[in-house]
Image 1 (tube, rainbow, N blue to C red):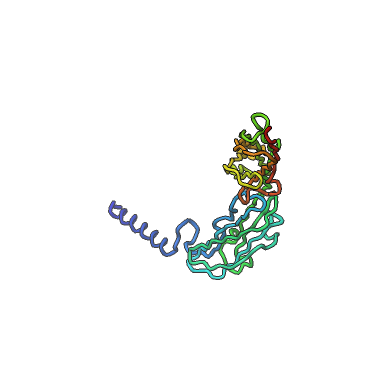
Image 2 (spheres, rainbow, N blue to C red):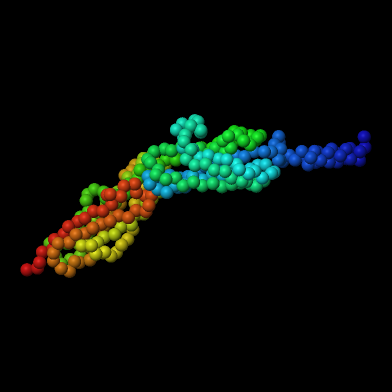
Length: 274
């Protein structure tokens, strides 16, 4: 057989393979290009990933249509599971339907309310009634476990104290020392540092400066609680009498599960001169 004949045979075989690919529509081995399937393609995920009690949190996921035709009325459910091994075991907390264009996706988000301490498992189920005649059914469910931590910002020990260079008088600048305590659930993985703003008033009048003190949580989350000592030089009072210093911690929403321990007072008496 001549070289030219073999060359033409090779060209013919390559052309036949190309025609077969075009006719069949294959883009990957064993998978038709236009196959009917809906699936959970992204997620579910929680935002934030590790919320604390009372923090606004959302569950996010995406449903994908792999077919070359649009799908209308694709049903889905979001459940909170009682048994992580059985996605349909829990109560439905929300559900809906969505239309998805050919080869398109539909992103969904749901805001959770009233999260309690502990681990919560959520399952997304697409086409729960099996209405769509899909080629693949095992990708219709996806799960997520969310750890809700009980984090508390409070005053630590010892109690806040105000000290004077000598006997309290109207011209001295006292020093205020207090400790911010951050107690976080030890099961929380790599919790973030928390910025805790605070305000100080004297007899109800705001005292400057108002500043912010970072409270750093151990990066591994295994050795809470963590404390941060704050020391401030306060302005002189300028007059005798009884003075109530009030210190108020104002952590951001979601950084503090208990707010009843965020205010403390220190009472100081300055005697009249002479």
